Length: 344
Image (cartoon, one colour):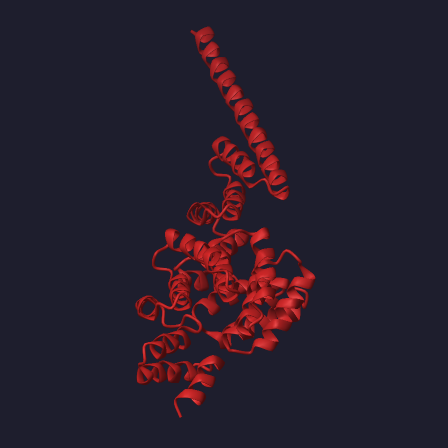
């Protein structure tokens, strides 16, 4: 009887020992995959990083750091939804994980969940008082909400902490561009690029400044650099518009249509297609497209100017002046000039 009992005790002890060894091995393997994921991430191999972090999570499902880092890798790959899921999981596993909360707020700031993002980031503000990049993230939200006063305030705070923060300079330039302060915007975009030549947002935005000034060749040169660094439809659509204005209608239209194939409700691309029709001497078709763009997004730049041009081409001076008047109220120089010259 005692022998049987002792044997049972030894068996249980052995099983426990095996479980402990197995758990230790699982934890060790998990940590190894985690380290490998970090190495891959630093090398810019984000797909491999996701694989390693996933292995780490499989070995240790409660590994909050692995969820957080996999979220960062997924965000770098453009998989925002999956990244948000990972950051949310990391926070649910460790509510004191401030970095995961910041990353979640940052990811949410590029979605429609802006209020949620702002609330989350504000909840950890005390932890990031010395972080220049934290205030840049806040500015992203305020800019999307068109709260330019708050955006300017946090950007000034960001630059007071790090005057060489290229992202802060780019956002400040964007803010100034929206306020029609083109020269100041140009200066800040150029500063950002001098600090970080791979700052493709600044390159694209600087191309807009040159395009607004009528220097479309320079605009093409800049947007080409942006596309080389980060190929996306926004930049290509801008290039399409610049090409139209240099007389290359065929190539310009190709890029604009490429954008519309991806999103047929892109008001900027629809405006550009309207400009194409104007240049092809089809003002009635241009009006259809430009009015469609106006309904989708009345804030599209130079839209009222082009609507005025299209209506004037059809002989409708009254309607043309109406749109140029709106453009003038928006401080668009082209509309102001037309209103003064034609609508006296």
